[in-house]
Every structure is written in structure tokens, then in C-alpha cells.
Amino acid sequence: MKIPTVFSLLLAVALLAGSSPLAFAANTVHPLTAYPVPGSPFRVAVQEPGRVWFTLPAQNAIGRLVVTTTGTYDVRSYQLPTAASQPYDIVYSAGLVWVTEQAGNKIARFDPLAETWTEYPIPTSNSQPTGIAVLAGDPVQAWFCEQEGNTLGQLTVTGAGVSQFAEFPLPLSGTDLESVAATSSENVWFTAPGRSLIGLFVLSLWLPPRPGNPDPGGAFGFVPTGAGSRPHDIKLGAGNLPWFTEPTSNRIGRFSPATTTSFEWYPVQTLDSGLAGLDLALGYTWFTERNSGRIGRLQKVGFEGKIREVLLPGANPAPTDIAVGPDGCAWVSASGTHELVSWCAPYFEQVYLPLIRR
Image 1 (spheres, rainbow, N blue to C red):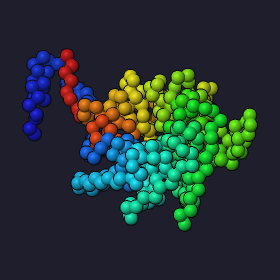
Image 2: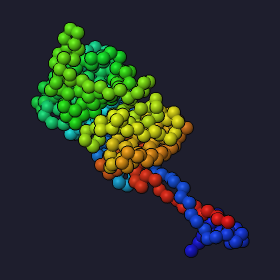
Image 3: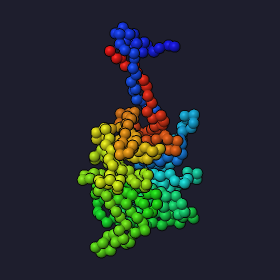
Image 4: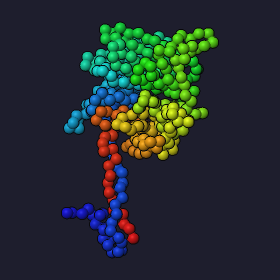
């Protein structure tokens, strides 16, 4: 067997020095593949293995990346009908792509087969929709945040195409709504970074506001996440309990009502990492670090968390979002390098280097 040159030299030095047998230390590398896209991707959604959708706010478009099993790939972009609409968040659900138009003040739906758009103007002007979550069915329910409107919105669309909006003003001002996650209309969670809160909305408890009582039915519940905190992205895990990124304290949080503090906190090792996007899959919590150019994965064991991080290629990748497909591949929007990056198993590959023991 031919031994690499560096290994041969280290072996000779070890033997001459009379050292003990060689030990091996693991150096972690990772399998990342970058795909150039026509613009700066912001949010990302996985349709199926090798088929990914993403928003391109500056280009007023969404994009689709298709990667074949042989490694070839195709990238296409689709312009939104409304000019300068600034597509923000994106969801793929039941064959359709749903998008919030932050500047266009609309919810948009794209049919990939017909390559056609349907836009739904939000009743509140200049509401600046941000995060969106879609519940499949008939009717489809699209829940979304109105950041400037300080309102939680719901768009329902029947199979026959009949649409209707409902808006639920928050009983607190200045919430700066960012992200929403839902498994049903009885379990709609959201982040309110402007008030350092996460919140829960229950549709069956909703009653219209009354003078002196903005939430007479008690449909909104809030949990403080700490003074000065700004909870960002939110997803629902086991038991419909939310996980979220909190960039100010550089931690990932999990709402845990059984604990004395109501939260489990998992600090990220890299300081001022700029925690942003989040996804839950395969029993892990996946996240992006916009400031440090890293992505990471958290494994929860009891009340402990093991975090491993990976540095993306490029001078300033600025990863803003992450989504994991059914095949276990994580897709990352590297907004700074105009790329989508796939991070697939084995994620952390061990390369063994000899250590000399004297």
C-alpha cells in the first residue's frame, strides 16, 4: 500500500524518537455544495429532494433550483406581477408556492405547472407582510405577519378559488412581527421582536376588540423572552412547542412550560453570530448565523444541547435561511455570495491525522 508522503515523514520521525504507537485525531470537514443563483436569495423552501424554491427580493422574483441525481442543475427565476414588491418569505405546499410581498402588500400564489401567479391584496394598506405559514386543505389557510400593521393575518382560499381575508390586530403596539408557525388555527405561534415576546393566537377564542379591551376573548397569549431580546425565526417541534432564534443573546430558545423559567436556552459558541433562519428536521434543530457566515445543527439530549457549526465558503456568505428536505439535505440561502448551498449527510465527515506521542 502506498503511504502518502506527509504520513511517511511523520511515521519516520515517530519511530526515530522512540515514541509510542501513533494515535489519530479527527479533523472535521463537511460536504457542502454551492449553486450560483441570479441574485441574493433570502428565504428558502424545499419542495422535494433536489428541488428548492427561494425568494429574490432585490430582483422582485422567486427562484427554483433543480439538482439531478447526476449532479447537474438548473436554475430559473419567475418575476412577480407587482413591480418592486420585495418578495420576503416563501412556502411550498400541496403543489403551490406561497409568497409574502413586503412592499407589494400582497400574498402571492405561484402555480409551477402553469407558471402563473395569483395575487391577493391585503386589506390593510402598507401592512408589510413578512413571515408566512400555510395549512393545506380546502380551504387552504395562509397565516402571515403584518409587520407594519401590527396584525396577524389569515387568507383562506377554497378549491374553487374563492378567497377571503381575516385580520387580527394584536392587543400590544410595536410588536414588529417577524415569523409565524402553525399546525392549525388553534395553534398559531409568532415572534414579536419589537416587544421581546413570542406569542400564541387561538382562533376559536377571537372576539372583535372593544373600547378599553383590545382582546376580549383572550385569543392572544404572550411569553416574554428577556429584556432586550429580539426573537426572530420560529418553528414548531414535538408537542407543538416552538423553537426560535434569538440573535441578541446569541441563543436558540425552546418554549418549555414545564420548566421554572418557561424556556430551555442553547447558547451558540460563535459570538455575535447573527442567528437568523431555523428549521426542525430529523430530530435536530438547524440554524444559520448571518454575521459569522456559519450554519449549525443542535442535538437536544434531555435538557442539554450539543451544537456543531460549519463555516460556509466565500468572503461574506451571510446565510439568512435554512430548510431541510425529506432526504436530510439542508438548503441554505447564502445571500452574500448569491448562492444556494446544500449541506448533506454525513454533514461532519471525519478525516484522521496522525498525532505523535512522546
